[in-house]
Amino acid sequence: MTKINETSSFSEMVFGRKSVRVYDETVKISHEEMLEMIQESTTAPSSVNMQPWRFVVVESDEQKAKLKPLIRFNTRQNDTSAAMVLIFGDMQCYELGEEIYNQAVEEGKMPAEVRDQQLAAIIPYYKNFTRQQMNDVVKIDASLAAMQLMLVARAHGYETNPIGGFEADLLAEAMGLDKERYVPVMIVSIGKAAEEGYTSVRLAADKVTEFK
Image (cartoon, rainbow, N blue to C red; front, side, top):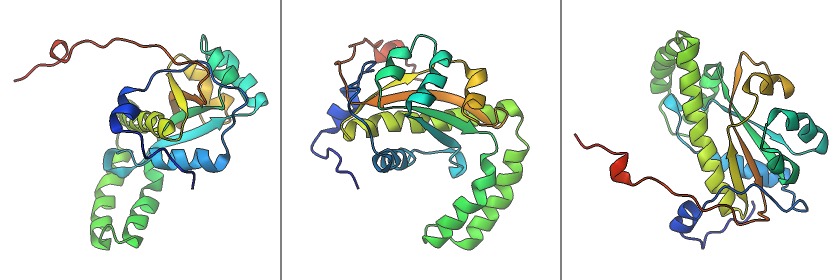
C-alpha cells in the first residue's frame, strides 16, 4: 500500500485544495496507487449502498488524444495530467446489489435475514425508477465519490481539477461504454502540480443559508 501523508491536518487537506490545471508531465501514477485512491474514494456514502460510481482512467497518449476533442476548453489538464479519471453513474447499478449485500454478510456487517429483507425491497424499488429519477440518484452518489477522490489524491501528494465541461452525449461511447447505461458525471484530472492553482472566493455562509 502506498504511504499517504498522515501528518497533514484535516484543514490543510480540505481547505488547502485548489483546482490545478497544469501538471508535471514526467510524473506518472502506478495502477496500484490509482486503484488504492479509487478504493479509498469509494468509502463515500451512496443511497442504500448501491455504489453506482464507475471509473475510467485515461492515461495513455492514444486515449488522451481520443478524449481531447470532447473536453472543450480543458485541454491543458488532459495534456499534462498523469491521468484523466472519468466518473460515470451506472443506471443499472442495482444489478450488483446482491453481490454488495452478500459481501456485507460474509464480512459480518449484516445478518443474512436483513440482507434478504432489504434486497427484496430495494431492487424492485430501483427497477421502478424513471430514467430521470435514476439519473438523479447516480449523479448525486457519484459526485460524492468524486469529491472524496479529490481529497484522497491530496493525501497521496497529488492535485486535481474537477471538470464538467465536456461532450456528455459522446463521452461514454468514446470510451467503449453503453451510453444508455453509463451517464457521465464528472472528469477529474490528477497529477503532480506544476502550478499552485487559483485562489477563489466563496459567498458568506449567511448569504446561502436560512434557519427555520
